[in-house]
Length: 83
Image 1 (cartoon, rainbow, N blue to C red):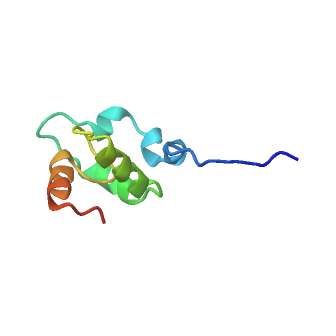
Image 2: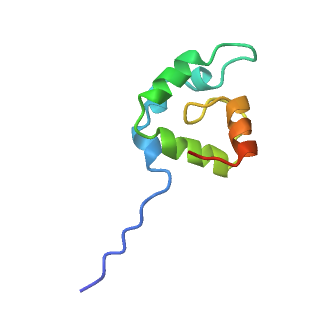
């Protein structure tokens, strides 16, 4: 009998992420534009923490990821805190 070695897909959160239902311009607004709506959508998303972890791990420098803007993620990186 074969052993079932199911490994969790580290990007599985993207399939049910609320951002998948909105266009990329929502999360990558023009410089100086508001990120408030994107952050509100992120706040309601069950994949928010996985998204943020992905952005921090992959050094995503643009857009809203996990409910944080570029500047907010940079502050988080500098502080050494991820929670």
